[in-house]
Amino acid sequence: MKKIVIVGAGSSGLIAAAMMKNYWGNEVDISVYYDKSNKNIAVGESTTPIIRLLLTHLGLSTGELFRELKNGATMKLGINFKDWIPGTEYFHGFGQVPVFDITNTSAIYSIPEKKFNGGMNYNEPDFKIPDKPFEEYDHAFHIDTQDFSDLILKVLGDTVNFVDTKIKSVLSDGENIISLTTEDDEIITADLFVDCSGFSNLLFKHLNPKWNDISDALPLDRAIPQQIPHKFMKLPAFTVAEATDNGWTWRIPIGDRYGTGYVYSSRFLSDDEAREKYDAWLFKNFQVHLDTDRIIRYKPGYYEEYFIGNCLAVGLSSGFIEPLEATGLQIIIQQIQEFMTINSTLKNLEYNRRILNKSHRALYTDVYDFICLHYNTNRTDSEFWRYMTANKTEWVKEFDNKCREEFLDVRTCFREKTFWSIDSFIQVCEGLNMFTTQSIQNFLESKLDKATIVAQAKEDYQYIENQKNNFRKISHKKVLDIIHK
Ligand SMILES: Cc1cc2nc3c(=O)[nH]c(=O)nc-3n(C[C@H](O)[C@H](O)[C@H](O)COP(=O)(O)OP(=O)(O)OC[C@H]3O[C@@H](n4cnc5c(N)ncnc54)[C@H](O)[C@@H]3O)c2cc1C
Image 1 (spheres, helix red, strand yellow):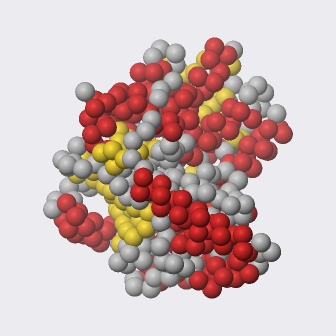
Image 2 (image 1 turned 45 degrees about the vertical axis):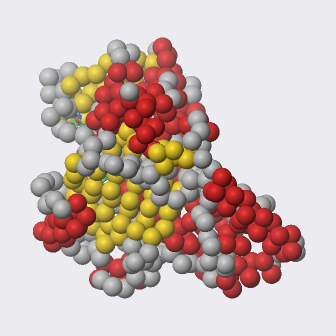
């Protein structure tokens, strides 16, 4: 039996424990060491559809999750991006649209006609959800992190050993973790250490990992979170990410409250200025004032590797890219799933290590590129936005060129590690006015089967319209009320 020691019981520690125990069962002995006095970050409330992979490891369906979490979970079908180009909004939904061989054909028809309809069925910010079994459509959740942690603990029961103690010191030879010492002087050894200690990166930093700083392109490095009590008459099935003159705010509907937060860059705003701006935003939107001193400080970036020697870094201890597309828990789930699948014998073959670390870099690169794309607004209305517009990555510049010159195809949008397909890219790019009628014309002119594509485009557009018009939806709130009864 292999001995696995996880340090940290925030979302990453609990998710690692749950997935590994489910995958390896009695082949592993898992202990989680965590310091109760050192609070979890507790802000990962918006998720992506991959959260349902975690549910399968927990043996839960969507309906069971809603029943178990009661007020602690709502449905999420996408993100509404507000004011990224001031005065406009666009929706990035999870629904897929028909792809005819090389691209999202319906967009070829609808964009020049100024009728872009996003995607089929439920691809708009709505207070209703599809009136069909949860299993039949793509979805994610907004979750209360404390309630969700309690649920994971309940599922784990006594299959995993939890120890509330502080890790006082780490002994390492620079290549492996040799042992940990707790504040009670217990010495801990393991076959595999999993560093889930958050930004403190307690174990992994002893293995000299190389840091990839992304702050030139994404300089946002501070967040202020605040929960706002809210009585929902209608329950949104979407997150709102609203751009401001110096960053952006999030708005996540859960139970009887909104989770909100303000993300900004310390290069352009002092903490006091940020508090002032966030306070004004809170008052304008919710008629409440800022009532927290909490400021989360982070370094934007990630480690080039996440598996060195006998130590795996998961979650915030492996890096952090701002939460604009709510990818924190997604990265954790993918990191662990990949590790288990590729390294299923736990023999730590060097070959597997190389594949895993390559895959880890690809995952972070995919997320990084996609997040950078959201800042391709060409705004110049503040020092912050002038900086963002002047400091686009090479990838964004090339991608932008492709959109403006020749639309998009599935190959350009292919992502190795993330679920975002061409639909996601088109929704964001159209939201940022990156397509022109001419670029779509150029795309068509470059195809031998132009006439077929044009015919297909109109047909696919009409198909989506019919779906939207005939699709039955039901109040999100009503569905949850029925489940909770
Ligand atoms: C502003 C912000 C907003 C975010 N929003 C989202 C979102 O909407 N969606 C999403 O998916 N993700 C989001 N994330 C990311 C998400 O919060 C994290 O990925 C997730 O919570 C995992 O955190 P963690 O478990 O790695 O770290 P933490 O929650 O910080 O846990 C660290 C653990 O390590 C333990 N520990 C630390 N030091 C010691 C020690 N010496 N001895 C013993 N134990 C120790 C602590 O007690 C704690 O249990 C957001 C992050 C930020 C910063």
